[in-house]
Picture (cartoon, helix red, strand yellow):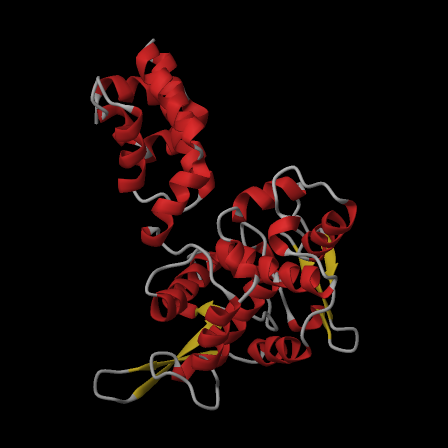
Length: 318
């Protein structure tokens, strides 16, 4: 890493992680042109329009730190090209970070308990229910809701569940599929994890959760390690198997929100592209978007979610 860029990172402790990711900015040549910077950004395979904005903002901050007005001018030239134009070139080679509804259905078909893929067959119900729950919105960023979820929190008659964080604060989540609720209750009855041994035999290992009726338990020998890490590990196995690369739990959650939101917009005769057009604050589309964000307890402004999925609106259609 360029020594000057190391100094820059130390000068911005609150953004240290982001700055480290884009350390290649410190190696840009002194006489780089706007066209070359644009191509360099594309070559580093940004995953979204938002990431292109972050790269340009980081390059501008670094230029100011170095008092490099020439680099600052080049960054501004690239901004004028527009992140949409850059993203349109970069997108075909970008890492997949969201899943479409057809992707979701493909994975759910493979995780069908009646005809499961062999990589998951002994524990299909657990994998399927965990994946479905996150996509349906049973999620928060530190996974408290999954860790604390228990059968006694499930109200099948009202298609709702009570979600609880580690501070014991609760919210009611409604309009959940009845089959998902049934699967969650069935998951709470699982007390053993089945593992295939090398000699084709099967071994049973005890599962332990926070409660006896926890929906998502973990292997007993790993009880001292974070339950949340076991969820991440299992979701990674699913997404790597079906989508040729790991999709984060957060982006599985976002994908489900986006699809449900797209369906509601279409039901109301509102074009998705129009609803998500920048500076479109028409009341009806905003109301529909807000309703789904509230239902999925996404506690950020509408524009924040728009920014997250900008450039990936196709996941709302499929």
